[in-house]
Length: 267
Image (tube, rainbow, N blue to C red; front, side, top):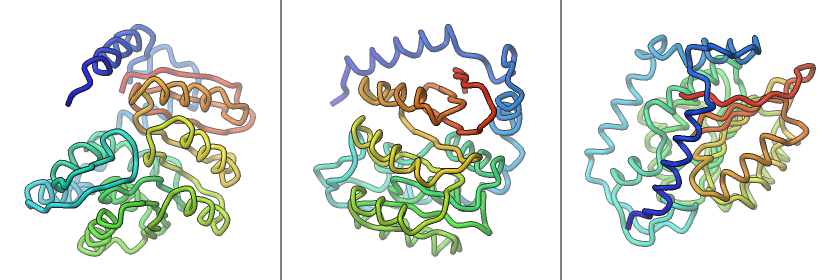
């Protein structure tokens, strides 16, 4: 059932967002770093189109495959299916869009990411975009649902991605183990839980494994009122130098020597 009140809230939030947001043309953005981010990440959509063709082809094949899955008890919001569902539905509801996937790819390229962490594999679409951006690096991705892990592994093997380490299990356990055993991460993508408390907890844990040039990406920051409050806490954190609100997605940087700034960009 569609939550009408939540849909109305999101529509109202978007109208308010448009009043303050800068466009991707870059007008009014006085930070050279953010201006470069806009030009090199947000505005270079066609540059890597051929590179991502296989991922999009495979996504469409999976959507039309007719594969069914059982119930899932992990995640929040649309990530939870209490009845058997189709792979098609999971991809349409839970996987990143083509636009978001190519954004993650370009961002990982821009920051020259070699070591990436993803919280929330689902069936592996977003993981493929990240892994494609750093063929000589490593993507560690966490997923709690065993059926989705199996589908993701098959996808990685089929497309020949051998730079992905998928960790199955409850986030509260697996994230601690991964952070303890890993070096600093260049990029961390938070897409595994759409509740404020665990999102903030994972953010604080991951701060121990970031460096000056790291970037954290948070999906669905306006999924709910509590998620947006979590984003506001994150963007105002003392360790964050630059935060970029793109309505559905939030991005934070930790670069020292840059005055703390917050931007809203319509992407």
